[in-house]
Image (cartoon, rainbow, N blue to C red):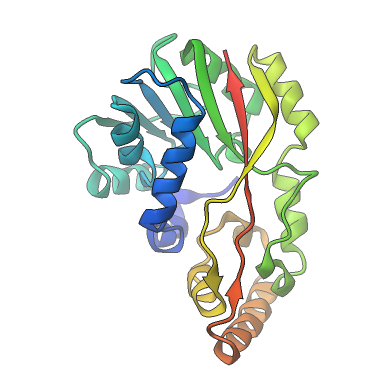
Length: 251
C-alpha cells in the first residue's frame, strides 16, 4: 500500500495537476454517462486533494461528499478545494461514512487499486448508491495496460503498474459479487492533452505517481537521469496522450 501521508501529499498537487481543459473534458464526459436529471448527490470516493470534487459539484448541482483515508491529502482538499456544495470526510472504501442509498453518482478515479479489500469496497459502493444510480470507474486493467512513453526509462514500471490492477475479467467478477452491474465494454476516452518531452519530465520528476514508490532507488536515479538528458535535447517533442479507461457500473 502507498503512504499518501508521507512524501506524496507534498508533491501531489503539482505532480498530478489537471489543466482546466482536461478537467472540463472529464466533466463533460461524466455528464454524458448519467441521466440528465439534476441535481445529483455525488460521492467522490478517494478524493485525495479534491482535484475533481468542486467540479463535480458544479457539474451535477451537488451536494458532493469527498471521502479520503489520507489525513494529509484530505487537509489539502479542505484548504484548497473548498466549495459550498462540497463536504470532505475522512473515511475509506471499506467503511464509507454515508447512509444507505444516499448517492446518485459515485466517482472512482484511479482509486480502486489502492483499496485493501476491493470486494468490500464495491459492496460499500453498492450500499450507498441509490437504485438506478451510476458508478463512473476510471481505472486501468491489468491485462490491457497502456504503453506509456515514460516506461522506457524505468524497465520495471510497466510490470509494477500491471500488478496493481485487476484484469477486466477479475474486475467484472468482483463487481458482480458485490451486486453491481458492469455496463458493456470499457469506454476509452481521449481526455489528456499532448505533452512535450520537457513538460512530461518536469511533471514526472516530482514522483507523484504511486508507481515510483515501488521502484528501486537505482532504477529511479538512472531513469530520471536519462529522461532529463533526452528532454533537454528535444524539449518541444510532442508525446501523445493515451486514452483513459472507464467502466460504468449500475445498480
